[in-house]
Length: 347
Length: 252
Image (cartoon, rainbow over all chains, first blue to last red; front, side, top):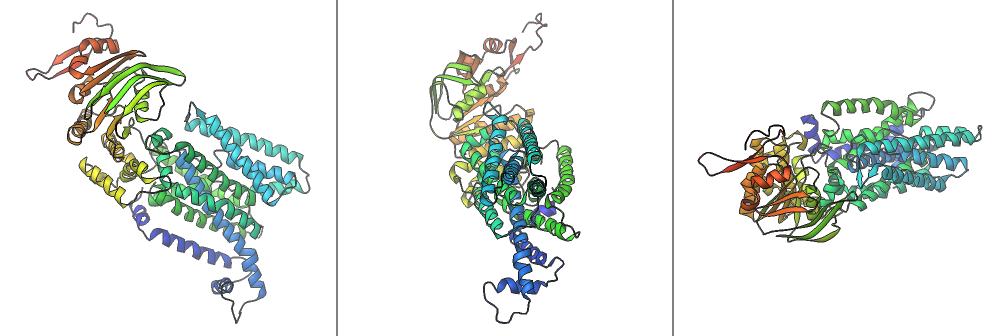
C-alpha cells in the first residue's frame, strides 16, 4: 500500500474532487466524436433545458447530437460503471474474497441467458429486464446453495459453483443461439451479449436508474454490515448482524444491478472485479469510505473505456471486449500481488 | 455470571455434548480443556448465542463478547476499522460508526496499551497484536462476559503472557466474567478460578483450579502421562506431558 495514495484517499476533499473529475470527464466526453462541439456549447445546450436561452448560438444539429446521441450514452456509461463497481465491491465484502465479481458467482451468465431467451422469444424492454433479472437471481440462489455445506460457505466451492453455473448458462446460451433465426435474432443476440451502449436511449436509461439507483442506495446503507460480513458470517452474527437478512439483501441488490446492466447493455465484464481494488488502495477497506469512491472511479473508468470504444476506430468496438482486454491483465497483476502478499487474505 | 444446566449440543447432525452443567460467578475465569474436536468451540458458540442447544439451559447475565481463534481478514482493514466492528449492536442495521463509537474504541485501545496501532493495517500486525485487537473488538460491544477460543494458541511465550495478563486485569479490575479454551494447563493455573475438563460426550469435570487440575485428571483427559512439576522453592507448579507413548519406562 503506497503511503501517498492512502494519504490522498483519506482527505475529506477526495470524494468531492473525484466527483468533480467525473463531471468534467462527462462534459469533455460529449465533445468527443466526428461532429465537432465545444465544451462551452455543451454546457450552454444543457443549461438551456433549465433556463431557456434567448440567443441560441448553436445549431439544431448540435442539440440533437448532444441530447439524443451522446448524452444518453455517457449517462449510461457512468451509471453502469458506478453500479457494477459498487456491486463488485459489495460481493467481494460479502464473500470475503477479493476475486469475486458478479461474473464469478454466475449472475452475469444467468442474466445473459435470460436476456438471450427474451430476444429469442421476441420480448424486449421491461419484459427483457424482468426475465434477465429472474435468471440472474436464480443463478445466485443456485450458486449459494451449491456452495453452502452445513451452513458454511467455503470460498473454493463458491467459485467452483459459480464456474459450474456460468458454464451451464453458457451452454444454454449456445443452444438458444442454435435455435435462433440466423438472419435477425442470432446477430441481435450475439451483439447484445458482447456488451455495448451504442444504441442506448432514454427508456434504457430509465431501466438502468430503476435497477441501479435503489440497489446502490441499499448497499450503501448496509456499508457497516458488509464490513462485519467480511469477517465471516459466524463472527458477524456474534457481533449482532442479522446475517441472513444482510446476505440476501446484498445478493438481491447486486443481482438487480447486474440484471439491469445486462438487460440494457449486454455483458460488460471485469469492471466490478477490478475497481474495488483501486478504491481500496486509495481509501482503505472500510466500505463506508470505499463504496462511494469505488462507484465514482468505476464511472470514470467506464466513461473513458466507452470513449475509446466509440472514437478509437470508425467501427464501433463493443464495450465488453475492451473492459475484458483491460481487465484481464489488471486482474493478473492483482492475483500476482495477492500471491506475493501470502494469498488473497493479505490484501 | 454464567449458569449452564444439562446442555446437549450437536454440530453437523452429531451430538457432541450431552448433560453439560457448570456455573461461574461474576468476575470468575473459567478455563475449558479437552482434546481436539471434543466440542469446546461448539460449547463456546452456545454461550455466545450463535449455536442453539438441543436441550438444556444457558443463562448469561450481561452481554457476551466473543474472540474467535486467530485469523486474517480478507481486506486491508485498519485496527480502528476492526475494533469499531465490535460496536455493531449499538450502531444498527443501516448505521455507521459515530463520533462516540470512535471515542469508545480509542479509550479501549488506550486501556489495552495499543493506541499507537490505531491506523495500522490489521493483517500486517503480529499474532499477539492481532489477538489484542480482536479482544478490543469484543470489548467494544460493552460486554460483561468475554468468551475466547484458544486465545494463546498461535502465540509465543511473551505474547501468551501479555494476553493472560490482560485477561487477569479484565477480571480483577473491570469485573468481567471470562471463559476461554486452551490446550495449555499453564494458562489455567496462572489465570483461571475454575476449570472445566471435557473428557468425552458425557464426561465433564468441573470445579476450582486447585481441586480439578491434577496430574491424574490431565493424564485421563489427554490419555498422555502428565506429571506435576514444581518451580524450585517458589511453591508455583506446572504440568509436563510425556508425549511419546513408547517411553513408558520413564517414571513421572
